[in-house]
Image 1 (tube, helix red, strand yellow):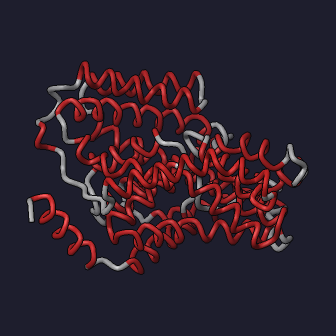
Image 2: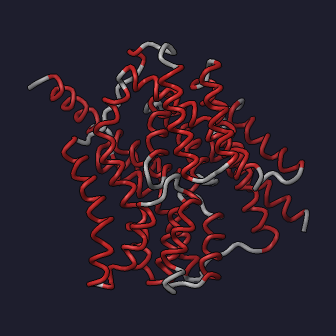
Image 3: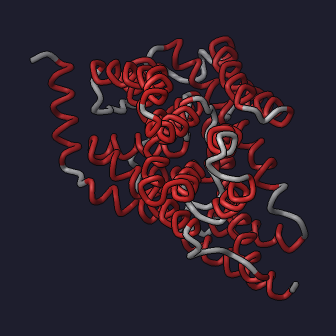
Length: 406
């Protein structure tokens, strides 16, 4: 048995000591408290797994976030899937995805059947309060990551340029361009930022053979599903959601135009129902990709919701499995470390730009809103309050202000 086999065996033994149930319960809690979209989710995950539980360090987490930002699919769900995989193997990854996805998916399916909805001053205030807690969460993430990942003028400058790029154009192409530019700038300016042995080892239980098989399956489904759907029209719904999930970079709101093209253009659902579901998706925690559960439920009931969920998440998880076996080895090379330092700085810039647009400008509309967001930020950073407490307090403040202004 060589050193690699011994290391893998030791890592597998250590991982088996952690229960997928532990992962499921943690991500269920996150699944009912993570409001604010993918950028806010990255902040919630950082607080839970880097600061509080110490499953990995800041550098490894930032590298993982950068990888998921670069791949197609829902970035925050890919980060959560990777954390579960790292903690408890494949069952842990499934538990993480299930726990994080299920609460919002169930809420949106119920909404599709007419069992939910937020209306009136209290409902509007609740939604607004949840938007304000996202401001606090993202600000905390930007503050903490900037201090550790942009400690010098070179990386601070890379972060600033990346933020300017995103503020100029928030398209997925601009986001990828900012990350690529960060990698090039890091290779040029950040070679001497820290020693090569400063990178911790993060082992993922995914072999290169599994990674290659995942990439083959990803491409085979992307190419083959449209052809099979012509012969078996019943596959059309799954193909539409899979195509949407496979072609979106950046996740979150970027998927909405693709989903509209996939389900409204063929006449499966009307624009009014589509926009109503999109509004409901803003009011629930968890990944925005669960909007597919609402669309699937409207089109085909509970089976349609399951088809929508699996179809839209599957391509992003497959391409992530394809990349993970090569990720840890790549990030340990000196040139790769310099590139990743630049990429991590660019990610901080992207988060900073997202803090302004859409998080800040869609939430902070008057001085009292700023006060609520600032209070949440102080509770998170100075008082180390759990995010759940901040969510509850901000939601209550939002309801109170909504009622007072009605």
